[in-house]
Length: 168
Picture 1 (cartoon, rainbow, N blue to C red):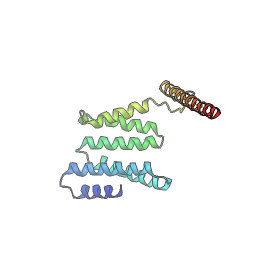
Picture 2: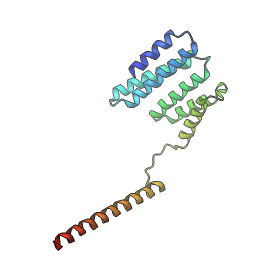
Picture 3: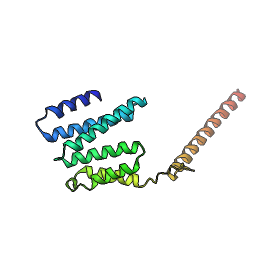
C-alpha cells in the first residue's frame, strides 16, 4: 500500500484537475485506514489511523467544491470513530454526509445510509448469542448426519474385511 499511497500523493500534488487531486487525497486516507486495520502492532495501527484522520480532515477542509468527496471523507471519519467505539460521533458524521443535498444520486449517499443503519441497529450492548442461528443449526445437523453416515459406512467396511479374513 505504500507504493499506492506515494502514487496518490504525487497525483494529488501534480494533477491539473482539482477533482482528481481531491479524489487522490481521499484515496490516501482510505489506504491509511486499511493499513491501520491490517496492522498487527498497536503503534503502527495508531500511526496509520492518525494519518487517515489527518487526510480525511484535509479533504473536508480543502475540497469544498466536491461534496461527494467530502461525504466520502465523512464516512471514513465515521468508520474511524466506530473503530474507537465512538458511536455518537460516527452517527453524526454519517448523518452529515447523508444531509448533503449535492450527493443525491451518488453511491456515497447509499454508503452513508447503510453505515448509519448498521450502527443504529447497535444499541451499545454486546450480547453473546446463546445458540446458533437457525441456518447454522441446519448446517450443523447436516454436517453431523454426514459424519455419522461416513462413520457407519467405515464400520460396515471394516466388518466386511473381518468376515472375509475369518472365512479365509
